[in-house]
Structures are given as C-alpha cells and as structure tokens.
Length: 189
Image (cartoon, rainbow, N blue to C red; front, side, top):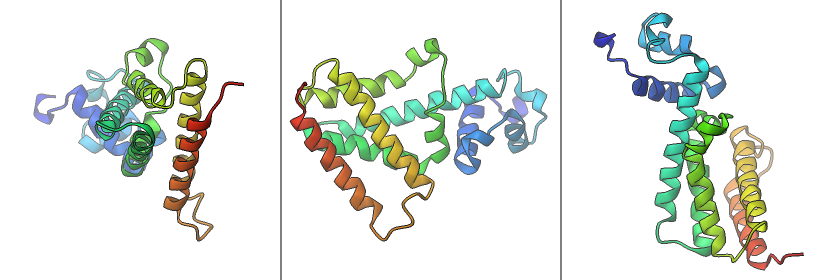
C-alpha cells in the first residue's frame, strides 16, 4: 500500500474526479481500483464500501461548494448576495457535475448534521435576513431557493434548454431578478 501512496483522502479525491468524468452514479470501489491499478481488496483498508466512498465524495463536494459560496458572498448583501450565491452553485455544477450530484447524496442524519450542508443553510439564511424574512417563511424560502437553483442547474446540465434560441444565461438572470423581487415583496398571508 505505501508504494501506491493510497490514503482515504487521496481515494476520495480521485473518486470525486472520477465522478466528474463518468458520473457520480458510476463511481464504485472497483472503478477506483482500476484507476490506481490495484486490486479492489487493496482499497478496503481505506474504504469500507462503495457507500463509504460515495459518502466521502458527498462530504468533499459539500465542503468545496460551501467554501466557494462563502467566498462569493463575502461583503455582499441583498440582490448582490443572492446573485453571487446562485452563480457559485451554478458554476460549481458546471465545472464539477459529478461532485455536484454527490452533494445531493442522501447522508444519514448524524453525518448530515456534521457536514458542510449546515453551512449551506446558514449562508442561505444570512442572505434571507437581508430581505427581512422571519420563520417559518425563512425555512420555506431556503427550500424554494434550493429547489429553484437545483432545478434550473439540473435541467441545464441535462440539455433541457438546448431546444430554444433563448440564451440560458438570460433566463438565469431573469430568474434571479424575479426571485429578488419576490423576496423583497413577500408579505406574510
């Protein structure tokens, strides 16, 4: 093992690269072993299973994405923060489609609570404070933003907007502007 330089961290990073190349759903310990030119059994001292590998990739992706969003949000508020937040997600998904898919991998509650997923929600809530949205509407807004951004990015990555001459970037800007207007004008029923 030492001659191959294999560590859990190196395997997870290689798994993340593999996910970007072939799709997260195709990442397995067998595929990873082929990448390193070792037997599958060699990896079991670092990873328990493909589930363990996928969890590691998901945690890495959540951390990378949270760091990117935090950098994008620095010093911004209101619509600027909303647009920066949205762009960071979209750019990450475009650059790392497999990792982006991994960021949506279902984690057990304990692992999820200790993950960077918590930071994502906190950053979304920080943006929403600028719109003066209180609970329970704040939770609804967090879910709405996540659903809208993810839905758009998922459709875009799968070619869902290739059938029309309208530039997806124009639609993206229109969507962010509309969300800003909605959040600024939201009143509690």
